[in-house]
Each structure stands twice: as structure tokens, then as C-alpha cells.
Length: 351
Length: 111
Ligand code: SF4
Ligand code: SF4
Image (tube, rainbow over all chains, first blue to last red; front, side):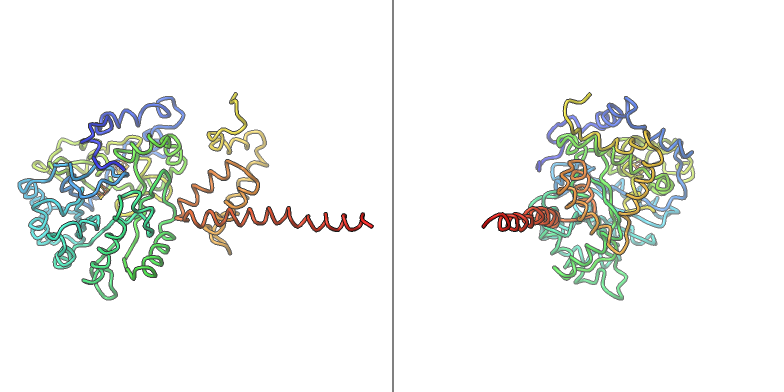
């Protein structure tokens, strides 16, 4: 596993443009596989349009204490892009007036943003129904200043969504780095201790599973059972739901696919598993993603590919929900990751 | 024409066998799909059985397919290897049990 981001390595693939080219060349250019546009047109879904806005997803920055090999953000300690207090203030104005019922903080490690706690305190006053923070778990143990995060999350009734690629050490450490599994287990136990995922408690703790390799997740419910059983038996850990998320072929996961000569097979798997029913529920139909510097995107993936919303309104400073809801969603071949099998979103399967 | 008997890319074309015999091809794939559904055995158990049999019939396509299927289902590599041994044990047992035939024949032919 590389210890640096693609960006710090000055790798070709750190360029969104290069990634988009790759996703349109070869098998897609030669017509071996249909483009996503042609595929969704078959069932009358082109152009893809938003439905009702339900989720505002804020990316507080690309800085992270980990450098996972599958990371679609290309996050890492060497990434310095973090949301400023000024942009956060603009977000707060939007949050106060939005029709969305869910606020979803992501990164990088959102907790590493120096204004993270201030922002959570302010945002929790806005009366949003479901307030999510995506935590990579190890951050809680990474430094003394983060040790009280479980209590902080509890205080603000934050719904914690955490990634744990597998309930076994080997696969987790391979994908996310040595020692990650043990630290994640410890962090989950700490969250349980303060009341997360405990009977009678409202504090929600969900886990994210994403495959550690060039294969797709299957049956989310079966996986949830396996995770629940293993984590309870081996570590006495409880959690609420498991979200099975498909890795999209962008950024470091794309790098891995190409380096391991799995790219074509993986794209075939995604296209083979294309499910028209999943198109109805892709997350860009109910989400707006906001980057650290305030730009608006259809989803976190489009953010990483620098595909800003196709709307007159492109920045948080000029946010207008009605105008945004009238846009066409920008798509490319990476979108096949959202429509394979039972579908995939930040909330797991979509059907 | 490919210069080797097995080309991994051919696995993707498996469905094309239906083109030259639609009725039989369709019947086979319907049957195949039905067999691997959740039933008295779980889909997970069937995946491991399929992996073991893939090795016994030594089909490289099936081995690729059911290794991937196992990974997707969260089956561990230890479970996969034990399944392969279960298949191998039956296969070697099937060879060795014929040793009894050899012994019988030997005894019959010997004074
Ligand atoms: S996958 Fe998550 S934890 Fe891993 S490097 Fe990316 S942002 Fe950080
Ligand atoms: S990648 Fe983004 S734009 Fe494409 S289908 Fe998924 S959520 Fe929508």
C-alpha cells in the first residue's frame, strides 16, 4: 500500500480529466460495452433527473489519517484541502433553509477539520432530522485530542457511520493499512460504551462494508448477519445496520484496478450486474454534494471527478434548491458502480 | 483464433451457447440459476460446494467464477481451501477405494 496520495505522487490518475478519459476509452469507445448514457436510455432514464432533495452531503476536506488503497477521494495526511469557517458559515445558512432531512458529513476524516466541532455544534441547532458523520474509526485513537469524540458525538446526537471493510483483521489491514483493524475494533467498543447501538438508545451506529478487491458486494442482509454474528462473538460489538457499498472505478481504486489488470473484468462485472431498477434510486437523485471549497456536485464521486452540477447555480454562495432540482445529472461510466445488483449509495443498497 | 484452449475472456461468452441451440441453452441456464438460489441449502453453502466440484472437474472457468463468487459472499480463504480439500479427499478416496478391487483381483488370480 502506498503511503501517499496520487496527488502527492504526482500520478497521472490524480487528474480528474485523465480518469474521465480512461473511463471513456477502450471497451467503451470500441462499443464492446455500452456507455452508461446508452444503457440508461434503454429504459428511458436519460437524461437523469433529481427527485426530491433529501440529503446534503458536505465534504469537510480531503485530509485523512489513513491512506486506504481503495479511497475514491484520494485522501491522506498529505492532502491540505479543508473547508474554511467561512464556507461552513455559508453551508449553515443553507442548512437552516433546506428541505433536506439528512445532513451527511464526510471527508477525508471530517474530524480533522479544525472547525469540525464548532460546525457540528452549530449545525445540530438547525433541527435536521438525521445528522450523520462518517468516521473512519481509527481517528478516535489517532491522537489524544480525538479520544473524547464518542462523547462529543453522543452529546450532539450524531448518527455515526463507520467503515469497516471486513470483520477479520487480514482483509481490513490489507485495504486500509496495518493496525487499522485493531484500532477500529477498539473505537467501536468505545462507541458502544457511551451508548451507541445499545438497546433502548437512540444513538445510531452503522457500518459500511466495501469489498477489499476487484469484486462486487452481494446480499447486504446476509453480510449484515455475518458481521453482526462475528463482531458480537469475537469482540462483543453491537451496531445497527450494515451498508454494502460498491467500489467505484475512480481515483485510487481505479489505480488498483489498472495495476492489478482487473479493470476490464471489473467493468464487465458492473455492466453485467446493471439493474434498471437501481437507476431509479441512485443517490444523485436525492443528494447534493458540497466540496471543501463550496462547489456543488451531483454526488461525492462527481466531486472527485470535478464534474460540477449542470446548473446556473454552481456554488454554495448562490445556492438555490429549486434551480438545482431542475438540473440534469452528469454521468459517465463510473456510474455503473451505483446501478450494479441491488444498487449502491452512501446508504448502502438502494433496492 | 486463440492459440490456447482456455481464454479467461471466454467465460463472459458462456451465454452465447444458447445461440446455437436456443431451447437447450435456455433450459440449462434456467436450471442453473434455480439450483443456486437460496433453498434448503443456503446460497453460501452452494457456492462452496460449487467451488469444490469446480476443482474436481478441473474447470478453470468455474474456479475463477466461484472464487469470485466466494469473495463476494464474504467467504474466507480458509473456508475456500477447506472446500477444495473436501473435493480432493473425495477424489483421491474414489481412486484409492479402487485399491480394494485391485486387492480382490490380485487375490483371485494368485494361488
Ligand atoms: S477511504 Fe476513508 S479512511 Fe480511507 S483514506 Fe479515504 S477518506 Fe480516509
Ligand atoms: S456516480 Fe454519482 S452521478 Fe453517477 S449514478 Fe452514482 S450518484 Fe449518480
